[in-house]
Length: 213
Length: 213
DNA sequence: CATCCGGGTTAATGGGCGTTAACCACATCC
DNA sequence: GGATGTGGTTAACGCCCATTAACCCGGATG
Image (cartoon, rainbow over all chains, first blue to last red; front, side):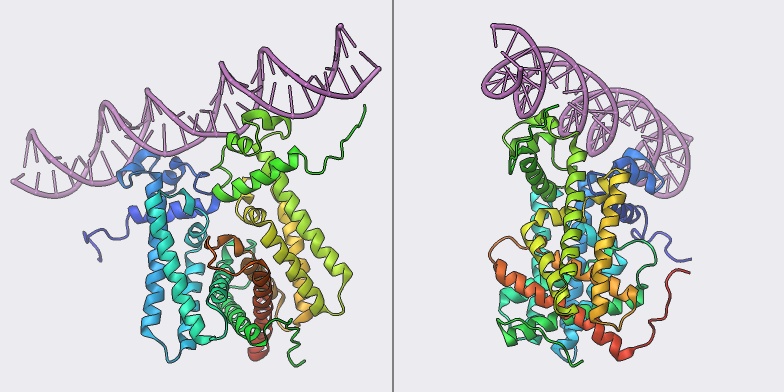
């Protein structure tokens, strides 16, 4: 009915990438054999070389791809510009959460296997990541004008760690479902950012804030 | 026979472990060769086998070791029991931050290479981790009685991600120094935990979704 | 002095794995 | 209906690397 011979729909290549991402995330780049990746998509062994130059090329495409999509998504949300900086920040957070929850394996790879790339690809990924971070930093500083740039940057890194924590979950149903999880993460991230502002306001001394019990 | 155990403070074995941790964290377990580890401590190649049964044994000892130390530290702080649950939580946070900042490579390994362990070691590490998490969950719920247990657990996981974010830093001096960083992370973690309480207070329902079942 | 033995060394072994070679089947095009 | 190209297959090659073998040396031991 749909797609008959459209220019490369969702087949093979992407299927391979998806499975490779999952396997790499589970057992690490070096921990996965080419044969396993093949098996995961029904073909076996060197058949993959009809689609990719090699194992490295798969990883490179995955990492560059996700970095680009993250940055593009972020830029889009910033460009759309909500009614306020706060709205933009919330949009950034939600976008990142969607990524973390839906593309869990990719998020894992993103900060785990970067060093396995060829110099040139690695530089590209790093640059994209840096731009993404700076995007957040700008928005955060707009919302919370207090803290220094380096503080804001560190906070952004930390919140990324927080949002990306989903991959490290305990398997069973010991944790909330997706929508509740998204909502919770959103709140945690906002709370963290709020703290950096509050802290800067009070400065130095310990917070010890027992919020109106 | 004679147990002339030299009280050697930092002896070989530990030196090897430290270097192995650093290398594993940098390039992944499979990414670093036995020869490299040897070279890092001045001996070369199979000389390591005078100290360890094999490469796996090193990783196992590292992961079990860090998990035990984390849990022991946590238990100690809980046992000491500050003047209030809040104080205990702050102590837990500070302890974890010290770990994350001082034993960066180990923290990295901790959630990166767990699957490379033999079944038995892996189970042990998982159990230690779980106990550590539950320790936090109890304290958090004492401080913030609102949220459900699964929410609290997810929040703890997320805050771990936040606190462990230090390894993923950009290299240069684009980030605060150690003491400032510790203080900042402390504030972020508290802010995040505070948020989960506030959030639960506001909409107060929907917590009843029993997982699993 | 002879003997252990802890801690090293280099050389050999062996398996795993990425990649390449050689070959094949089918659809499409002219 | 033969040429062609696309997506597979299995077998072979070669490297990397963990582990083991065989040998060695300095210092306690006695």
